[in-house]
Amino acid sequence: MKLTEEYKELAWQGLWKNNPGLVQLLGLCPLLAVTSTVTNALGLGLATLLVLIGSNATVSAIRHWVPKEIRIPIFVLIIAAFVTCVQLLMNAFTYGIYESLGIFLPLIVTNCAIIGRAEAYASKNPIKQASFDGLMMGLGFAAVLVVLGAMRELLGQGTLFDGAHLLFGEWATSLRIEVLHLDSQFLLAILPPGAFIGMGFLIALKNYIDSQAAARQPAPEQQENIERVRVNFD
Image 1 (cartoon, helix red, strand yellow):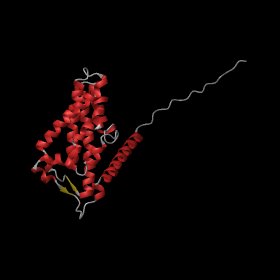
Image 2: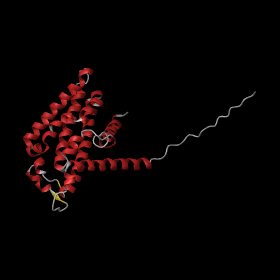
Image 3: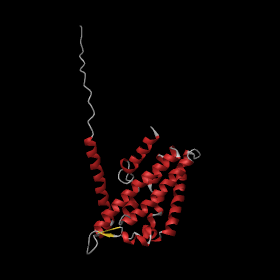
Image 4: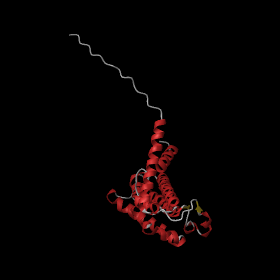
């Protein structure tokens, strides 16, 4: 496979076909827990993206020197180091969103999507491809987080980007959009059951789009069956 085609395939796999949130269904605990607003979803998505890129690149760089028997503990140590770096950076520069994400920020260490990519792809491929795979998988995961967060915030509060200043600073206060004027919050959308229902709709939508795309594909040509006649000369 040519290098350009390989990058295209990695992008297609990460963003759509093998998306960690919609297809692999990995890392669902933080995905369902913190997506009550777009800001929280974007904060966790960016943190996961940075950890995925860093851990994939590092695992790929040391893959020839890591014994197979102890590769998983080493991968976890690498992921934990990057999670700690991201956690300290968010504590220093975005303390508000750091508090909002709470325990789910250090729990990125146990995110199956990250350790799964380290094991399945980064440990077998060069640094450039492994980093690009981490970028695409991270973007796919972050996109699902943001879409689910937008659905829940819109239905629950009638707003978008509420609390954006916690992630981007005071200037981002103007990003808050009040789409619907609700007298009270719609709790089903904000609480975890709303996250499960919203996630179910997103998975159903993806499957519907895939089935429609498959239906538009031309049907493969069927080979004509050649009837064999057995002749006996008895």
